[in-house]
Amino acid sequence: MLEELTSGKIRVIDLGYAINDKLVRWPGDEKVFEAKVNASVHFQPGKTTVDEIPVKQLFGPAVVLDVRADGAKDADYQLPGARVKEWEKRHGRIPEGAIVLLRTGWSARWPDAGKYRNQDAQGRMHFPGFSVDAAKLLIERKVSGLGSDSMSVDCGASADFAVHHLALGAGLYHLENLADLSALPETGAFLVVAPIKLEGGSGGPVRVFALLP
Image 1 (cartoon, rainbow, N blue to C red):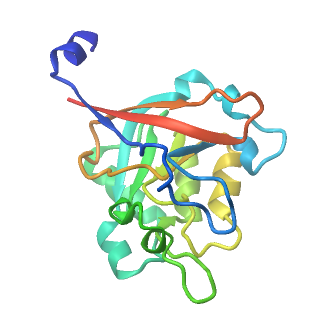
Image 2 (image 1 turned 30 degrees about the vertical axis):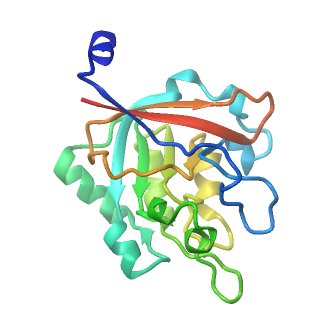
């Protein structure tokens, strides 16, 4: 692989945004949110912190679930478990250690905070996310992490962050605010996840690279 990387046979795609004053903030939070990682402790006290995420979980095959058309019709769309099974009918069973990415198309709205957060008159955000039943199925598949090109792996309108509680509680990590995923195939890419090694941290900035043959 090293020879293929240096020769240019493998293409490397940066899935993060530069840190600057244009980063979109979570409503009511002064912290900026570039591409970021959430460790288990983010929602589950006593669980794995960012610096404790096993290194082997930071490398893995990418599984891309495309919901751009669904999100365009319904901004509150939640990917059902049935769509995961449809993916497996086309490509085979999701491998253990995979990193599953939800391609919502929301990165096209970056860095326009109004369009990206897509808040209604009550301040509730609207963007697609994973459903609880999809998260349960992916946990059964023993994937390493879930990611999205939006602000959260839960849909924007979520009030209880059920996917966060479920997946983080099972030892997965989350990748949020990923940049344009359009170049990634549904299968075949390999991801390198490089979070800042913040001792005791529940989350933080992350560099994510996709390697494409």
